[in-house]
Image (tube, rainbow, N blue to C red; front, side):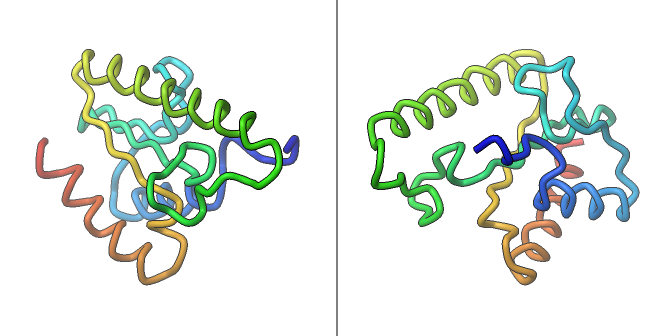
Length: 128
């Protein structure tokens, strides 16, 4: 578990490179905001979280299934993560930020990644 990185993961890098190539400027892993968002787009008042399906309990996703061993530990751990995510999102929304969550499984393969990233641009710009 100690080898698992909390930032600069492949999904994060895919999204950041894509946004930069489309002319978006952002801050990465900004500690000034609750939850230390993966991407902050101040100009668009938008925050993007890129969640790992397992660690953030993506409902209905095969990758979020709990391991067979220590089920109670993992249930509590993932449940605490979900509760923390909800608290952070509510705080950010209360401050006027729009929140976009991208799940790891949505951008895992090239086809899904292209589709999600194109819709991401639309989602960022539409409310601006």
